[in-house]
Structure formats: C-alpha cells, structure tokens
View: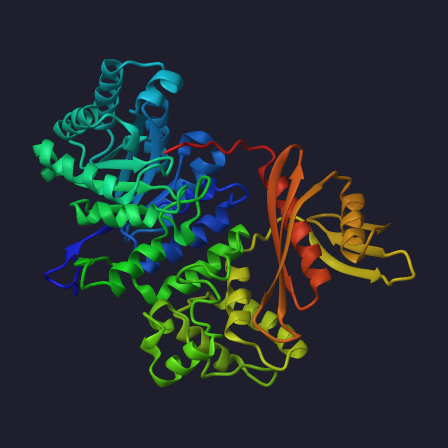
Length: 518
C-alpha cells in the first residue's frame, strides 16, 4: 500500500503500456526523444510500471527501452517478448540499466490462435511456456506472463496455464481481452473463476489488459478488479491497437469519483493527467474528440439553459468532478503581450510543468510570438506551446519561410525555403488552393512523392485569433506517417505538419517497427 493511501482500500497496480501497445496505433509511432519525454512524464504521473517497448522488433525499439531504463528510476520498466530465446535475450540486453526491470513474456492460448497462428497443441503450448520461463529466470527476478487472447481461451486450459506459470515463479499473470470481445459480467466472472479454481492465483498478481473494440475496455477492467484482479494495463488517452486500450484516465477517475462502490486506490497523481494527455496528443498527432471522457473540450462545458442554471447554483448538479482534479486549471493568471517570464513561470507552476532552462527560454520565445498576434494567451494555447516543445524532434528539415499568393481569380502559388543540417531547399509550385500549393512546393523541394490521406484542422482556444492545430497523415512509400503543426496562421500550421510527417518518414525509413497482438 502506498504512503497516504486509504488503509481500507485495495491497491491497484497501474501498468502503463502507452509506449508499447499505445504506439502500435496506426500513425502513432514516436521518436526516441519523444518516448523519453513521455516516459519521464508517466513517472511523474505515478504509474507503477512502464512498458517501454518490444526490443527485438527493431533497433529503434531496442534503443528506446535501453534509454528509458537509464532515464527513469522510480518505477519498474518492462520489455515485451514472445516465447523465443531471441526475444528474451533482446529484452535482457535492453533492460540492463534498469533499476527495477520486468520481463513481459507472452504466447497465445485460445483455440483460434493455437490452430491458425501457432499451429500448436495445448501440450506444445505448455512445453513452450515452461521452457522459456525457465530460460528467462536466468536473467530476470520479476516475470509477467500473458496468455494472449485469454478471454477466448477455454477456462480449464487457462487455469492450467496459470498453475504452471505460478509454480515456475511468475509473479504476475496477465489475462488479456486481446480483441475486445468480452462483456463486463462475463469478464468479471472469468476473473472470479480463476480465484475459485486456481489456488496458486492467490499468491501472484492477476492482471488484465482490455481492448476497446466494443467500447467496453474500461468497464471490463472495472469488472475485473471488482472480482479480484489487482493490476490493470492501460494507455493514456486510451490509444492502442484498433479501437485502443483501457484509458488510464477513465479508469483512475472512475475509481476516484465512485469510491462508494469502488473501494480501490492507485498511486496516480491526477493533477498531472491533463498536461500529460496534451503532451501525448502533440507527440502522436492523435487528437481526441470533444466529447472524450475526462479530457474532451465538452466535459466541463454546459450549453443547455437548464444545465447552466444548475451549474451556476451548485456545480455538482451537472459536474461529477472538478476540472482542477485532473489538472485543468482556472485561468486566474491571464497572459498577454505584456506578461513577463515571472508570470509565465507562475502559470507553469499551476500545471506542475517542469522545464529545463533551455526549454523555458524556448517556451517564452514562442509565447511572445503568439502574444504579439493575440490579445490574450489562454491556458489551452500555453499547454499546446509546452507540449510542442517537449514533444518536438530537433532533426530533419525546418521551414525557413513561405510565401503564398491566392485568391478566387488567380492561380494559388506558393514559394518555400527549407533548411536541413547542411543544405537549403527552395521551390515554387501551384495548386488547387494555398495549402495544396505549399504541399506541392515542399514535394518539389525535397523530390519526394506523398499522398495526403487525412487532414484535420482544429482550433486551440477560442476566438478569431485562436491557434490552429493541423494533424495530417501522409502515405510515403506505402507507409503512413503522422505530422502535426500549430500556428495562428493555418497555412503555416499546414506546412509545419507536412514537414513534420516527412521528417518522421526520413527518421523511420531504415527501421522496421515490429508489432505484437496482445
């Protein structure tokens, strides 16, 4: 039990897999620098375990796990491995510098996976598990085993696997709902049946890893802890394969708000939830919808007259949590063009944001540029500036300048200048509109062929002078790359997003990002 926890509440271990399963969201790949930044913020947030990656899958993944192991010391660092010695060796080498390392090893157990993917019998699966856990114990004191597609595995066989792994010294057994197939009552009963039929389960941690294909990942996770599970695997913003994973913020706030029914405790410092979410959105370019639980713009907005009247009289009539509980502060310090560094530091302190002096100077520089264009710089603007700094990558091409000529009676034309490490690129092109023209100019300057698959423009803050945030997906060489840009000028934001996506292509073209299907 963590210091300060309610003595009557059961401690729930938060296993965060944003950097592994979350990164497997289409277009959500992160650079090494971005992973490091996010890992440090997840440590500050208070997660118990960070799954840093799948080391054997690529040199980038291996290096990321290794560097995170060096940078983060107050939480456990996990690396994923299949039941192969090659994977286990890679996990061990990547975690050498971790103070508290965990091997997360898995194999599929369901009839579908046994027959069509692995082509192994139950007996062969059990033999494979025993062989590789015994091999892993030479290198790891703490091992978590996952039975992939456990929710579609015959219960009797799942019990057998749990007994075997527990007797081999595995400390945590994970029961994934890999394809988001389970229903809460069904999944809760599965967890209960494990404790009823496997005495060894009481001596280890029982974990769950739920996907959101039917929109039930959080509900299934809650049903699991109500029936005895004491670890939940989550991702921030609920990102992950297909429809995503159990959202860290939704699970934690459900526990916090409904303590009358959920007598549990986590170590999450909820006041850091919102700033960390903003950082992740900026890094991945995966924007959340306005009605997203906890973090969506509409969560604390009230348009209905009846709702407004109720909230004005007593907030709890229509708000079940306070914005500041999750780090959405009231704007009692208004920033503008006359604000100095002291005011900016105070605002950052409100959000618990910690920057190096170099990062702060860059933040102040960007703040003053925006403040010169806007009457007021709102908290949303500031959070976007900070997350942009923390999430940016210093490599690749940068936009030196752009000129656009457009109108309803002239052919839209754009001229751009890009600056690389030791080179400059200049080009001019026409297009169907100013954004199309500037994209064609960038393609021409870099001699690259890109297909624009998605373009999303979203305002940050309010008013005619609000910042514009652009998120795009480019297809380059048959692969998708996400880019994002922000500016008070939407054409500039569009250009920055395009260049960002192309830079991501250059950074990743020599590496093969692997994947797992847990």
